[in-house]
Amino acid sequence: MDYKTINCDSVVKKITKKDSLFHGNYCVDPYQNCEFGCHYCDSSFEKTIYVKANVVDILKKELEHIKNGRIIIGSVHDPYQNTEKKFKLTRTILETLKQFNFPCHILTKSPLILRDIDILSQLECMITVSISSLDDQVVRIFEPEVPSPNDRLQTVQALRTQGITAGVALIPILPYIVESEVESIVKAARSVDAQYLLHKHLELKGDQERLFRNLIKAHYPHLLPKYDALYDNDFNPRKEYIQELNNTLSGYCKKFKISDKITI
Ligand code: SF4
Image (cartoon, rainbow, N blue to C red):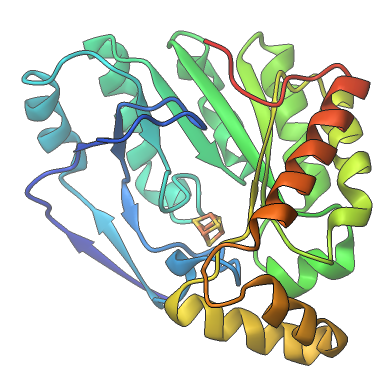
């Protein structure tokens, strides 16, 4: 992995469509690309991580001119990937949001977020930690560089213990691989006091589709025909599959008394 520091012209992107999943109005990413390398994610293809060295200077200028709204940090690339230990850009972004009184929603897979509990507890913020499986074998195949699911769940528990709003995202749901454990995942989220369990199906687009199919071919060859039928000339799975998945998840969320959406 290479690291390059860059200067950017702008950092705050406005979210134009209503964001009913994460409830954001803007997004900010301190790093471009992601070291965690999940094999279902576009951010993992590039082998260079671009570190936006001037992110805070530009952010300060931009916050002065926009209407107050929730800023999503990490909508595209994990803000607590390993390089954050050295550069601390996410931490300085949080300090800036506190100074300007902007709320935020952080999406991550990393326990490194616990380093910043002192600032998080002074901010209007929510934290969503993503999990795609609790099964070590599945995690080794699809998320080989990411902190373990147990570490991620313990991160949610630690945030909740400090009174910080936090939940789990079961995103993406890997078809025919993870359905058998979704009940355990909802139960695990509840057991660490997650306040919600967000979920979304897997989309397969462009290069990501080709790489993902290669992984399926290597590790689950019997599933290839099922994937062909499920993603029939579309990047989304068939509508009936999505509907059934959503119904199943809603049922488990009711059973374990956890919301399947963020209610603000
Ligand atoms: S941690 Fe998130 S941004 Fe990074 S590769 Fe995985 S899914 Fe993509």
